Amino acid sequence: MAEFSTLEEAVAACVRDGDALAMEGFTHLIPHAAAHEVMRQGRTGLTLIRMTPDIIYDQMIGMGCASRVVFSWGGNPGVGSLHRLRDAIEQSWPNPIGVEEHSHAAMANAYDAGAAGLPCAVFRGYRGAELVRVNPNIKAVVCPFSGEELAAVPAINADVAVVHAQKASKKGDILFEGIVGVQKEAVLGAKRSIITVEEIVDDFADSGPNAVILPHWTIGHIVHVPGGAHPSYAHGYYDRDNAFYKEWDAIAKDRDGFRAWMEEHVMQGSAEDFARHRPKRTKRKRR
Amino acid sequence: MSDYTPNEMMSVTAARALSGNDVCFVGIGLPSEAANLARLTHAPDLTLIYESGTLGTQPKVLPLSIGDGELCETALTTVPVPEMFRYWLQGGRVTVGFLGAAQLDCFGNINTTVIGDYDAPKVRLPGGGGAPEIAISCGEIFIVMRQSKRSLVERLDFVTSLGHGMGGNDRAERFGVTTKGPSRLITDLCVMEPDPETKAFTVTSLHPGVTREQVIENTGWEALFADEMPETPAPLAKELKALRALKKRTEKAHG
Image 1 (cartoon, rainbow over the protein chains, first blue to last red):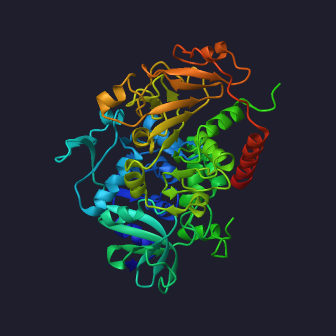
Image 2: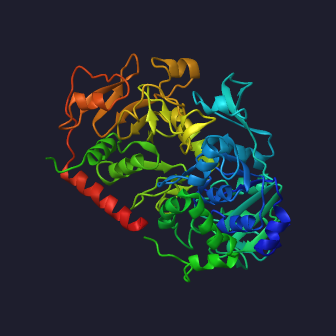
Image 3: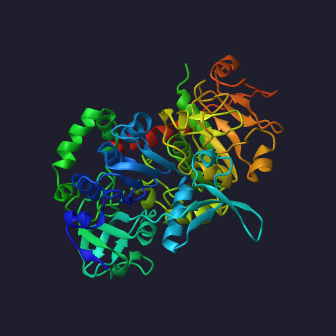
């Protein structure tokens, strides 16, 4: 049942050392403010699940929160490498990290299976792909009807799903708009959940009949964090900060520079810092 | 002295490979540049799909990421990511997958995962993303990349995405994949197409001013040339104008 709380309370209540976390958002609605709080509370030994680790997991890995990462594309989109992810895999800094690597199709299907209560996902994939050799969680099954061999991967059921959304109603229902990624699947498949939102409204009367909504009885904690997806974006509220994604390349390149930046901007920061990333006017003009 | 760069020659040639009837699954970077140039020039009806779930998108600037808001705002519709991979890609509704590569072999197999050993990589690259299934589920695959001995290699360090496997009918026989696979490679020097029998990439046109020696020097496998070697048509002024305007708008938008 949905419970409104502060970010400190939500993370303290939901996230434990050694948990498997799925902090999702496909480029859009990435829950950065929540990740900062997980780092401030010093969680370690986490399994970090995300299709695209992006800056959010680059930061958490570099701060030593993770012992394992499950992903399908680990770059800084359009910019280059995630230097902290690379340093962890290539040089075991700040600690060795286990890798479970998939394709996007596999992870999307695995989230879908997790939400559907199935033990695994079945799809036509990985043919001729070498990940099959290095990832023991990629297996094959034979269709009992056609005889076709298909790929199978385990369902994703995280201990905690953490996502950012545009709106929560006062009752605790959640509304997502725009690129909706695998957020709904991640939350429905997880044991516990934290949803940060741009705003809390009376109801969703102005949304269409097919809006993407998670009912309050599927939600754990809800936290009001305006701007909480920055440098990712919230459709209808603020744009992706592409300039910051480019700047991150230099910030994360060097270990000491990275730690200094994190200390100043994250470890000494708070959830309220994110509000400045959100323009005063809530409706951005369309180009 | 020509009035366009090798990169512009590459993007214009790659764009021309697409037609208005295509439904194209677009990779980020050079493929995205080529696909949008096609849409802005000779193929306004071209349908572009990005793996973030955006169907029929018409961005005014090139997205930096695969999920920029611009893609969603200008799309016909945006579907959840599992639906994108299940109904649209796996469902066989995409005619062309347009990919880039860090390493490519002569049979169009692609590596974007690691340089060196997988368990102790010299360089950890981003990985496959959507490519392993794009490579097998789209009607055919076009690849666009700058060529050098480091990128066009004799042997891949890791096979991220299947091309023609070991060549010939390996793709169908060993892996049961019935789609056409890599059918065109567009580089900054030339266009290559697979030999009908062996499926090894063969140069079928040289860009204006490019020599066979240049291609040989920048190919990690023994370069093959078709019997007839036409010159790739040079970019038209209107294509260059559209490409440069697109890149200028993009630069301004991303700061």
